[in-house]
Amino acid sequence: MTDAELAAIVGHEIGHLSTQTGATRQGALSETSGDLATESAADEFAVRLLDRNHLPKTAMRTALQKLLSLSDATESRDGLDARLAKLP
Ligand SMILES: [Zn+2]
View (cartoon, rainbow, N blue to C red):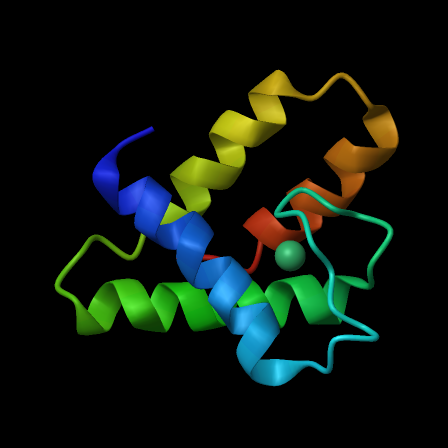
């Protein structure tokens, strides 16, 4: 992972913390049991954070793609593919 991709992952998690209560917070970037809207909102937060810090907005996408390449669970792939479709 590049520095920008690590920033994207941290930004995604901060996005959860800033938009959700602890009771509904999802802990893992690749968590797909949470709903797609929640994960996509955290992804969007991360993209805005990247842009504000003059990092490539595509880092969220490439970080997810790298996680996807490590995943062997087809149900996880479906969730990540849907999120990738919404990213720059
Ligand atoms: Zn998440």
